[in-house]
Amino acid sequence: MILAPSILACDLGHLADQIAAVERGGAGLVHVDVMDGRFVPNISLGPVVVEACRRATRLPIDVHLMIESAERYLDAFADAGASSISVHVEALPHLQRAIDHLHKRGLKAGVALNPSTPLGTLEEILPEADFVLVMSVNPGFAGQKLLPSSLDKIRRLREAIRARGLSARIQVDGGVHGGNIRSVVDAGAEIVVAGAAAFAGGDPEAAARALFEAARLAP
Ligand code: DX5
Ligand code: ZN
Image (tube, rainbow, N blue to C red; front, side, top):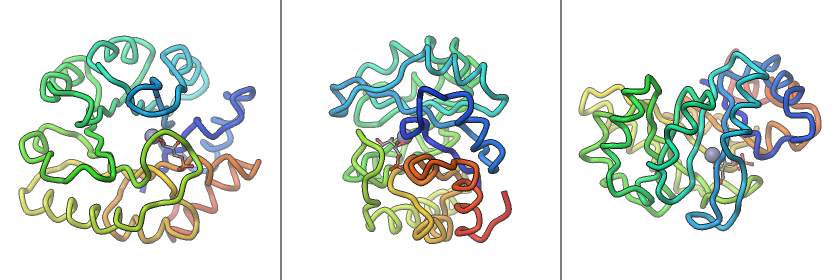
């Protein structure tokens, strides 16, 4: 399991310290949630924050674009230091072109699905995606409750990837905490995003360790 703390939920006034703390706790990625107030009903972080993360850590920076016209901003986030970028199938008509562009820039490319978006929308693109981000809440805010139907969606996706002999990894994002992390990992998620569960308690290092313990995995 790769733990990917979402800095949307951290104390942004102490960004570098908060990232260092989750890194000590075993985090493998830093997840940055980018929202435009159009695709989702919130506005959050942009390329300057990705640059600040890049300076703060050697961990890969994973950018989750919850924005319209995402293709216009891929280079800005790549230039800012992103290692991987996920784009939503609901927001991008030319998904293949975006993934191809990210690969040409040397980044890993993820395809993100909202809870109500069927797995069938991945049919053509799955062989080209490095990972699939399964949203387990409706995107927009940290601290929401995981939708239980996400577990079956992750299981079905894992089976589809296996049956086709593909290598895409599954990322789960939204409402993961110590009480359900084991079930999302068992369902097939390999990259686990955690916002509130990593940062809301005030001790991100201990919180990250506790998530590995709850998943019964070593960092
Ligand atoms: C939701 C974001 C998530 C969120 C996760 O719109 O994409 O990454 O910050 O936060 P928690 O883990 O608190 O749901
Ligand atoms: Zn996210």
